[in-house]
Image 1 (cartoon, protein in one colour):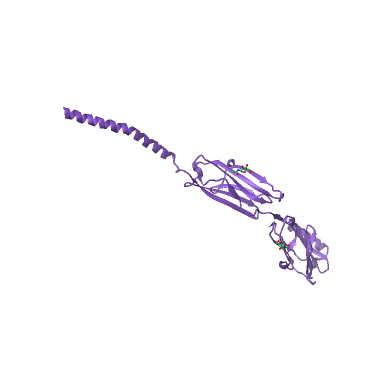
Image 2 (cartoon, rainbow, N blue to C red):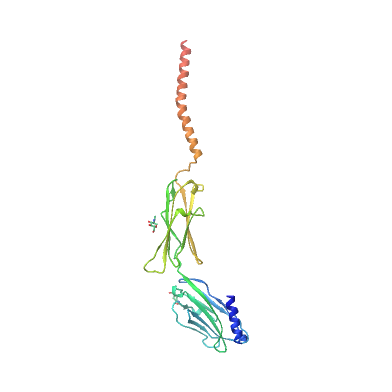
Length: 282
Ligand SMILES: *[C@@H]1O[C@H](CO)[C@@H](O)[C@H](O)[C@H]1NC(C)=O
Ligand SMILES: *[C@@H]1O[C@H](CO)[C@@H](O)[C@H](O)[C@H]1NC(C)=O
């Protein structure tokens, strides 16, 4: 960008028109949302002479023209995908509304001095229009309760977008291991062949380490850089009270003690009875 500025300065200087130079600052968002709006602005610094006009181009087609000394001082021209909101556009600011896929393109601002028609400066920036999903991601297949060794399987999908959404699964706020993940799969609909629904599957066998205090938090997150990030989170519980292996040992021991003690108590009873009878008889 600096290189271009220096080049422009040198160009203007060698053309001996340094006194009419204006520095242009162009603001065009790098990304827009289909159906949304964007503000573009082209700022200039007045020097010795005055501004003649600012012209706006999309892919080399002029769509907006501002000429301060004329009445009316703005004009707009039809260009596919470029809908200028004239009420919100003024001087060096242009408001674009109802952005569509066709609004993606190279936007240029061109300033001419009161020469007239002497080109002073030109700057261009690319604006990319994304189709964002109309909702957040949606999860199917999960149950509220799981037993240990149950298969946990779920699909996460996000409505059609362009570009494709990046889907991720998290277990208790940590990214799910790659071995738990299948997909992603993409589905393209007939109405929007340029967009795709994304699907990502999570599937694993529930183990004690998946539960924190008997609960497991699962989250699916969808991202389209830089305009969109949404997630769906749910909490699932262990179905039966969780038994630690040391508890299992304790149960086994107490069962053994019980099983051994019953015959022991019965035989002691008979032994004492025999002893009493023997005492009495003798
Ligand atoms: C934008 O879309 C709305 C709703 O469809 C419409 O009423 C409005 O005229 C459009 N604006 C422009 C500048 O195309
Ligand atoms: C998950 O998505 C895949 C791919 O579309 C599909 O084959 C599978 O049947 C889905 N499973 C569930 C539980 O919806």
